[in-house]
Image (cartoon, rainbow, N blue to C red; front, side):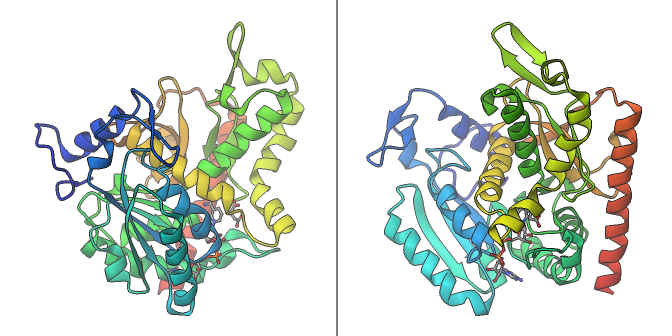
Length: 376
Ligand code: NAD
Ligand code: LMR
């Protein structure tokens, strides 16, 4: 992330390492601000702001997400931010309403708000881009049903980001079909490093943690290392084979504690795969609170790092790891350090998992072909 324009301290570190160092430094010496937020050192309010773009900011995920960013949940409780909110002209008035509310909330970390329907203005100088804008799935639709509407948006926004975002901008695509929108964005923004373009499967990851925690009646924070493989769709493979739970006698495998492979191989998987549809059925709207919170988790771990011994799921450009075809944005287990993600290597994959991982890769290949046919 090029933060040279916002960093005041000179050091031998690269810009991303400086942000990393600054953000990591917040994890010591807790203090509280006048608003009650936990602060971590006395100079924190002197930091220069990071520019964060949220597209589709007038929508329901946007409405849940922007206050989380302004409160420091995404980048840290001492990291000032300037929010760039982009939407389309029919949503301009609603977008202005969100801007008014952000001002009224008097967030101490919020140093500015750009609310615009102009993609160039929205993308200019942004360090982090959270791409939520698009047409959401309605009851009875599969995520790929929103393909034609959304891939053309991602093609044109790729160009705006490529030309106007800060060098090394980190991109998270949330809008569905998330993996394929991210792939289109990557293909049409060739100068953005492919490692910087990701999609959200952290919501599915968190859903899997939540299901295990409910089943075992343990705090969700004691469960770790579930994996979401593949597509953010009903073909995704939620895998607990490497997951564990903290107990009074050390970490134990999830399978050993649950003692019900039939549930883990059946209902657990389908519940996570179908959770988005279940939320849409219940709310008549797609998940917003959990999507916004998971988007913050994704960026926070990417920038600040994953805890030692913990991996998380991110949709990233496949390099062929685990024999997943390259050229797809596929969800893998990753760890993050110094602002970079790496795929966790060497996990044993059994035959059942292999089939499920291949099936979701197949769907992504079909989506990719469909996306290109929509664009041509
Ligand atoms: P929403 O309809 O409430 O909001 C979408 C917003 O995007 C609207 O304000 C709309 O005006 C705006 N928009 C449309 N075209 C745009 C464009 N070209 N540029 C900028 N903004 C544009 O929908 P939502 O519930 O907030 O969901 C947003 C997207 O996120 C949907 O595609 C949904 O399916 C997806 N989603 C993904 C996940 C995930 O885990 N990856 C989870 C939940 C929802
Ligand atoms: C979700 O998983 O909640 C979102 O992708 C919304 C959807 O379309 O399912």
